[in-house]
Amino acid sequence: KFAPSKESFGTLSGNDEGVFGWLSANFLLNTDADRKTPPAFAALGALDLGGGSTQITMPAPAGTLDAVSVPLPAGRPSTSVFTHSHLGFGNKQVLGALTSHEASACLSAGATARWEPSNNSMGARSLTGRGNFIVCEQGIRRVLLGFDKRNQPDAKAKHFVAMSLFYYSINFAQLAGHLPKTSPLSISMLRTAAKNLCAESDGSLRRMVGKDPLTPEDAISWRCFDLVYATRLLVDGYGFSTESESIEFLGDVHGVEVEWTLGALLHDLFSKPPPPAASPRTASSSKPAVSSPADKALAAFLLLMLCMLFWCMRANAANTKTRYQSV
Image (cartoon, rainbow, N blue to C red; front, top):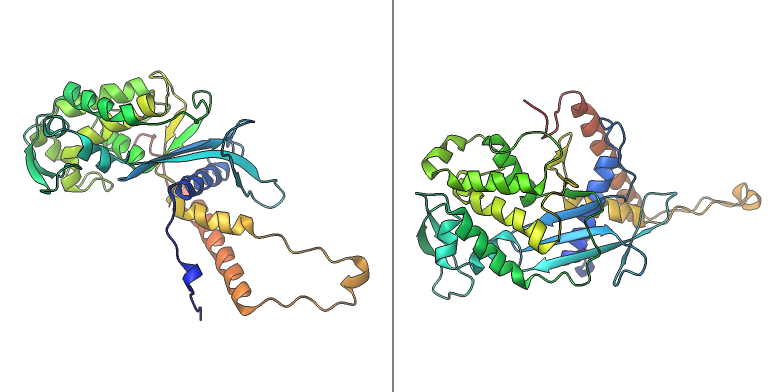
């Protein structure tokens, strides 16, 4: 029985979310048996996109301001990463920062949907979609003028994993036939796919109902916006080249989702110091240290979670295809 205290709960900061997502991506790809040359642990950068914020985390070059120390598995020294959470630049926040004219351009033509501007105390209003890629892109680029990346190290030369809403919009475009299910994908390919997706009427996109488990029916009409925003955020926000092929868009590895929750577990596990080695003199004479029941329960829980993780990855490895493979 656990007795939770006030210290057992807290609000997850955006930077913690970025670090945990980075740990999750590096751990899953480093242990992926299907990869002929798995990336070295801690070598990848990570990009995350949610409704309220977006995060970037990458290995920190020497001299990086505000570098964060992150624990690694036993036997490896901790490493330094740059991480930053851009509050207010999640996709829902940016959609609300558009004008109604811009927002309707980001909604598939013929669709009717509720839209809530961020500066309107009157609440949500109804919009009719126009599916105008150019106007949608211009509005998003206007909002991204406020994106601050002054202290961010150059991301162009590094390999990144992009997760969450980055992946959801790419996956939808692939299933809709606007992107190939192959890797790598350049950002210019994403922009072309966004242009074609926005050109589809909402009636045409209804064919996708029930086809993508990551896209609820009421989100289909906004996938035009989601893909345009993901593309412009990578270029105008994070500074990637339009021809960059250094980003892998990933949802899961053999059924294990790439997300911050796994990284939080790993961070807690890696942060625990290894048990001290007993000296030859005291090893035979001293009684073994007695752990508290809570310590034993926590250690058993963490071990069980890791065993279950590896079991799931191995069990699905033979049958699960990556999101880029043909089906």
